[in-house]
Image 1 (cartoon, helix red, strand yellow):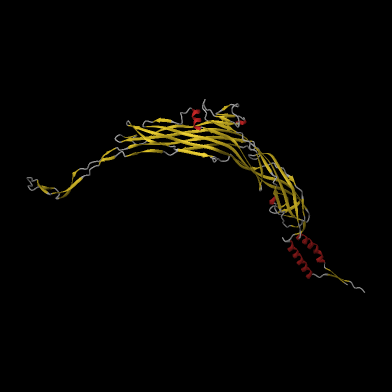
Image 2: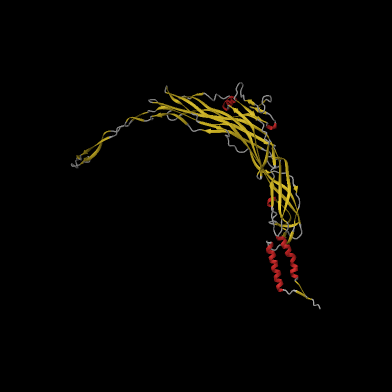
Length: 537
């Protein structure tokens, strides 16, 4: 009996079985369970103990109007009354005549006079035109420049953020991989709808100053036939009004005092939050009121896609002020409305400025939290990490874990520690609603000169107007920053195991099996098998 022993085939049979196992590996699902991360008492203004904002904004307008004009002047200063007469000439013949001037030595001496030709001569000389000043009528002009509104100063500090972020993290792991072959852990994460954050209102102080300045230039010129004009060449002007004045109207909680001051005065019995406070710049003079509210903006953020958002708003100040009357009374200025002016050649009655100002100011806050699930992976033995090299530790965003490759057939235990990187954005703005009505410089004129008067018969102005209602200032943000929100806890997750089933030579396990089988067949054809013969009986 003959026994054939194909030893090489037997030697590689185990390798083929391992390759077949690697090619038919099944995915294993890894789950971290619910990961709850928390942080409390973080500043809403920046990392660490960052303070809030300290800003100043002008809530108003400035103007510089072009010159407005009414009336008109006809005629001119040099009107021709009697035209001039041009020179009149005619042609005459001038004879050539011999004039004898004999002398003793030359009895024939003499000379000619005349040219023996035609010449043009003037018979009536030119006369200049006779002119006169025929200007008649009058003009009145006006222009204005100035500033009106409020300076608002606002300051905020404190204000905190508490956040709770929950994730579920998974991996789709192969149950066996080839040594030296890169593979993906197939990470995925879900931000839980139960995640949230809350903001606690900051401490805010504010100050409002009334600002007003209005100046005007009034002018006139009047002309009568036979008298000329006054002034002769240009409009006579006069300037009225007052330079810019600033008056502290109201302040509250300056230096964290918790107090309200109106026109610089403190009266805790009268000045109460959320109550109208009358503004009296002088005894018996009331020019409006102000209501002071302490903003209390506490928001709760909820999940929107991959981030969390919240928003809140609260009133700060409500003003209702006769700004022109306030400044006039506080600084002892003459009346701003119904004023008259005698400027020599013209008399003018005018209102230099009229303002209705009633804004309501509110603080608006919009917050956004953008968390990213991070992980530190510790390997029980070094692995090859794509883009890094051989290491036993990596730190990465969970969903951006790099591919890895095992270095030997030993099992590798992987221990994850989870944490959160979070960006927090704070956009705090000032909203202004209400009304701002401004009318600048209305005037009527009468003109006088040479003992005569002229009524132009119509008013002039307003030379500048402004009418704003609701959201009438496009202010930059009081505060707008994005920063890292820190101090989240770290969570040690359950470990998982990676196993190798063979040595990888090429990237496809099926191709590797075919290659090894081809090698075996080639060796069988070239080598002589070991043959044992047993002969019996």
